[in-house]
View 1 (cartoon, helix red, strand yellow):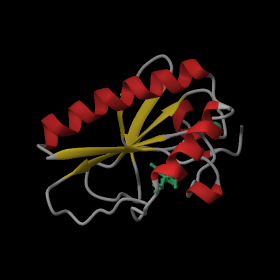
View 2 (tube, helix red, strand yellow):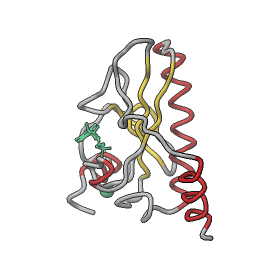
View 3 (cartoon, helix red, strand yellow):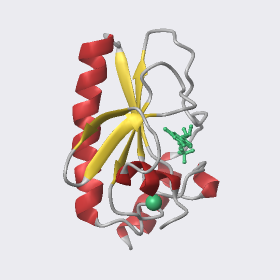
Length: 135
Ligand code: 5GP
Ligand code: ZN
């Protein structure tokens, strides 16, 4: 994908503050960070989203995200880490090369969850469960 910014970063053709790389993945700092140390983990291979991605790349990104979570906890002394990932504009995805956010969190930092917790009745949970099990 010649016009994909994250492909450019993976290839080293676009600048990025790289923190980790291996055969399948690259981790680098987000240029519009939620907070200091906000990282992105990408597969080297282009895929628009989780649906298109090779499952092995999704697994490799999860492993790198775990490694980076340990890195931010150790190097920055964060109290917690948010690991999140968006697929599709409806989910808030803005760069269409699969990526995982690793966000250091500190007590009371005010970095919000991307949703407001709602309510679900036991009946609604059962209905959703059946739908998602394919029943
Ligand atoms: P999304 O909104 O798709 O979940 O996340 C995309 C992320 O990529 C955003 O947090 C945004 O700040 C970051 N981003 C967009 N363009 C660039 C770029 O050129 N370089 C880097 N390092 N991050 C970028
Ligand atoms: Zn790409």
